[in-house]
Image (cartoon, rainbow, N blue to C red; front, top):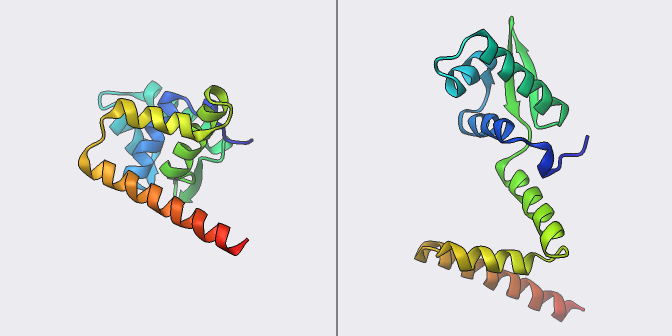
Length: 135
């Protein structure tokens, strides 16, 4: 199954965030973090969510003795890229420029973020210039 942003629910994303932060985790560890006062039904919920994420190729299950251990197979960066591409396709006819311009305009970037954005623009301009020279 191809991973698209609408395939990942908010609760599945919460599990992915835990896996990104903590790395390999058991169902019990994830349940305890998501539902500190949870019981059997919450454990079953986390197990079902992990089954769905495994079906979407977002997590990998390994047996460690009698316990299943899960690891994220999609990175935060990959998921962000997919969601941004989907949003650009849906709202901006596939163009990233209006989407990124709007994000910058409404986010009031810190000086550090502005420097990082300027660095990205500089790298893109340099890559574009070097590509034109080779042509």
